[in-house]
Image (cartoon, rainbow, N blue to C red; front, side):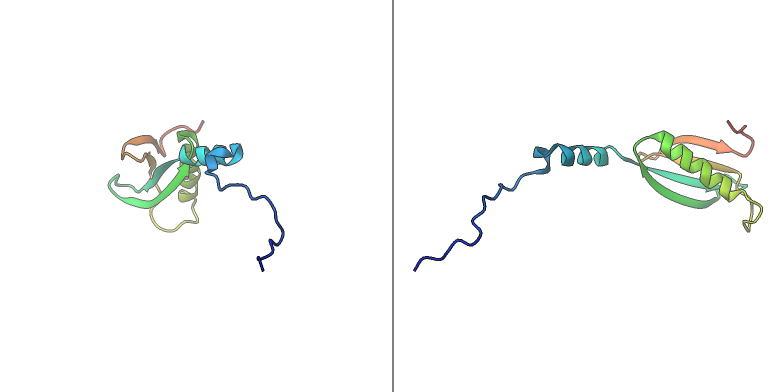
Length: 106
């Protein structure tokens, strides 16, 4: 006796994500994200108080996050020395943004 085909449904062939527009767009957006390293600096520029890595699609997002972290690091309730500057370093190790307490807020 031959085995019965239970629920004989046509199965779609396995496909790579590039065949599906939504998955392709999602994978492209993820691959275009870059890692930036944000460093909060103390009174001596060589002293890094905090280092955070963020993945974002552009420098503007990293800059915004750096300014928020810098503002938080300067609140009076925070213990220790107040932060003097913040810098953003790209994946290649280049400093692409720097902000100190002396810079005017936009």
